[in-house]
Length: 259
Image (tube, rainbow, N blue to C red):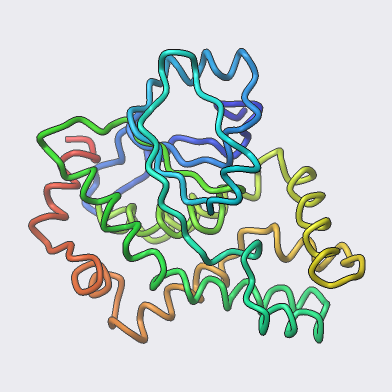
């Protein structure tokens, strides 16, 4: 049962197991798809959750096309942290590659390419998200991280956050894959089908669409492999690229994990 029925990929990342036996605290960080279609019941539910900050990873165009709806008098501070690696903003050479191999395998290869870009393009986003979470002069929790589908850009950012506080690797992957359970997959498939029609000039086959709307372990693995090649490990990436050393990670874990 989704927390918000009109934003079915909205979920709490609480109660995930850390390697030291603690668990992530509930009610502090939510991850989500776009919040543009919330009905009255969901607006009331969101008001009860009372998020203070929303980190919106969508592009300016996506935000203009589908602006978020917030409870009256209870809108959070929105930080527009656009991540320009997504199927909606494909470079011409990637479009040409997809046209040349308009199959499920071609779509999966495209998704892995996009995921390999995420560790680089998400550096400024992760720096700002971690700065918010570590800021002891102001309260920024609860916090929402979202993109359009809530699975790729949001999936990577949340995976790095969970790793930073010591959540077990299998639990990180399980949380990422939960996007496949969201009940908005039919709606997402229609949107992707329309986009591919515009990009390719032809109707995409169902298995090609399925490859694009899925959260798959090999997609996240492509991002992690890129991290490994450049930084040796996720720990190295967090320290070298994000500036998150062990002391800061301990502080972060103190805020986000149970005691």
